[in-house]
Length: 366
Image 1 (spheres, rainbow, N blue to C red):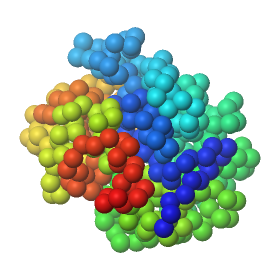
Image 2 (cartoon, helix red, strand yellow; image 1 turned 90 degrees about the vertical axis):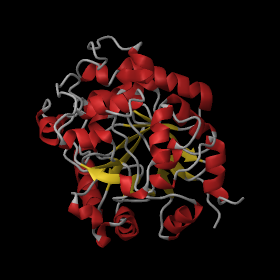
Image 3 (cartoon, helix red, strand yellow; image 1 turned 60 degrees about the vertical axis):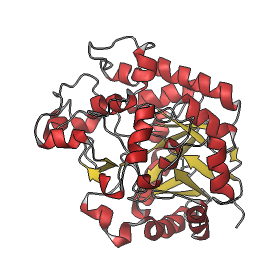
């Protein structure tokens, strides 16, 4: 099967591959800019921009290095700098921004991304019912929500149509094998009926009721054959995160990449998160410290996600997600939190983004 270009709103993506937005320094200017340059869609994560390049561009930082409050953790100035640097790499090719709906300053972050030059906004970690309101002053910016069920898409389209006379420009349907936060409760992630190949066709059928928005499959897609399988089920494109960690251009610390390279299948688990959703990552020394109650002290400095309720949920699960993801960005393997998809154990080499996209487009052996 030939993998063809597709459109999201007014934008044409040459290769039907979207690089997943991976927060706190995994997909920033170098990775996203290079992915877009190579004809796929690069996605800059808005999460944790305040820790970019050792916090040197962030106004207010605590002694231990954590940005103070949401306006510094989600620094708009730094997000604009990241986009500026990415544009130096990819020029005018389409470039997206991922903004978590659980972010404690969601609307402001979306506006910052639009002002920074994002052509598209991708939002998951909650059903983004207010997404059109945040982008009402930027009509050319394409809106791409992430859902896990056809029902969720139906609810969202009804609300958007009624309140803003707007519909998604595309929709991502994400199965429970993805890295990071899931759209299902813990037990639901393992049910056969919730796997990507089962939830994708109903979402495609629901999307047809609302026009011609492309449906993008995500969660556990690893190689060319997986992409072809999703296309045969009716997807217009796929979103992939974990494989892009295994590239030279990925913005992650070398220690982060090594943690994924070293991970065995049994090391990758669904973990509890202060965000309120289970999250998939590598079980490391951090989880042992949490169980032994020797993990780093919890103090809500950044106020990063609304569901955490200023650190209350962090105390329940035993760690601050902003601190631990920032540690991973800094390469601190003892206390860092390392998200990866279920197939992360298959990562065994670091290659260029161009090599990876060629493998995905034409097969590993071509």
